[in-house]
Length: 261
Image (cartoon, rainbow, N blue to C red; front, side):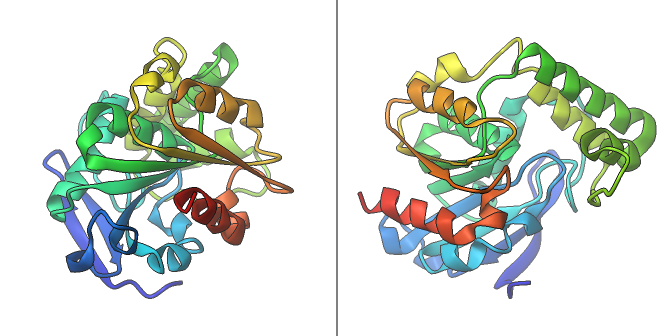
């Protein structure tokens, strides 16, 4: 576990959440040395999922991590939620910390919310680093998200874990099951309302990192890349969905190559 420079509970207006800051916010700015990285985790993860990548990111700027609504130590405001709500949460974290602009680093669901933030709040997003993400959901994926959400409502976090991971060995899930279910519905909505046609309006540079064996598929990342005006794709060999956990060195190498291009 990395040493946290600052751990605090932040009121986002709709709910409170846990925020961890590693680095000096007073030195934050738009130059490379003063970059701020705002990290958005994926579905049923929490801010601790960034533990392995944070030390490397902190050598390149200030790292801010937070629990998305319903997850970890975050509150769960009344639903339903939209992806715009979760994108607004990211900007509310920046506001609470007096950060003008940040590079959003999003994994999976966090990447979706990062893209939504770049579309809705372009002045606040200096760049996007998207890991194992997508911009749409086919009928099969939407049905799976629906089952996850309903399991969370009916059976709590145990139902979430069983539906996502199966009945064998399961990872623990921290958070409020009903809040996570509401968040999952925003992913289901990607079937009827995909982000893909809107991505042409993203005005910041984007790095997409994806594992060779990501079950969402390298093709999903390539679809996102083709829709964006300014994007770079890095495929990491031999890993799956959690590239930043499995290969943090490869993730940071991809970032350095992109940032210094």
